[in-house]
Length: 373
Ligand SMILES: Nc1ncnc2c1ncn2[C@@H]1O[C@H](COP(=O)(O)OP(=O)(O)O)[C@@H](O)[C@H]1O
Ligand SMILES: [Mg+2]
Image (cartoon, rainbow, N blue to C red; front, side, top):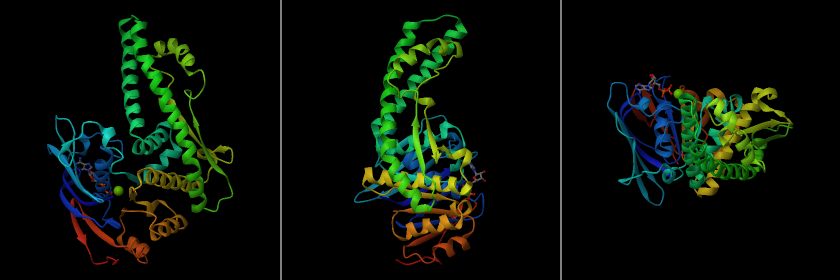
């Protein structure tokens, strides 16, 4: 599956752009602020129906404009036209070959994508939310049922929390009503937790072998799924927590507090890992994400590499380039503010390379240093 053509109208700083892509490597070059990351985000939108950077949909409409639209033409053995658009004051719309998609879980995973971006280090350094987001993004693309359960869980959680707030504000309690939210919430939590636990078992060996491939580190790295829900008496724990939930006006235990421990030796990577180890860990996580989606979907996800040449050191860049040269990946998008560097790094690859020079919202395709297949 690859993205053949992308058309943008009023998407972030791109007023209008039409780009024809290579099925192999696409380099987006241009100064900082010219809109390279925005372009990757547009591709991410077509796949995941939302921004990769946690921004609201409204923030993606070009300032002063009334709407945005992203049109992508994908191709494998068939062709697909995916349109994602949003008008101010209306609901976001998603269409595939002119049919309206009303359930995101039906769409996510059809055009798989993996993004490696500078802020990803947050997955290692920041709180549990970042790690849950990483694994949810991976699992949602390979298991539509998982995503549906997750959407359901988040809905029940929101409703239960707002009920807890209401009880507090209006100074009354209806525990039967509360139970109508608690019961389905607990059921969803159990099934999500089971899936998360099984997923990590499959993910770990893939991750470990990629980590070893990236660096000849003698330290053993590993990960573990940590959850309140993943214990035999979770239902009892949840019930016991109810008094605390009422007092704090929020649901205190559930899969929304799950975490994944990343370890080096038997210590937390965040605390004792060197910068190099943390970066290798991160790249291995992303490549394992790529591999596992590829295995499940039987098709290589589109790989978006945002400013990685700035963030990775030479050894890791070299390793990644070897993987690219070995055609381990399918379609690739690489952004870089320094075209000479990209050109130098990629010059020995045999794959077709298309280069796009972005100049503050205007995009020019530059074929002057394309490699030929
Ligand atoms: N909704 C929007 N409308 C107009 N411009 C936007 C919008 N959102 C972001 N931008 C602009 O896009 C630019 C950043 O683009 P970005 O893709 O991050 O650049 P690059 O990756 O090339 O450095 C910034 O100048 C920012 O102000
Ligand atoms: Mg950028």
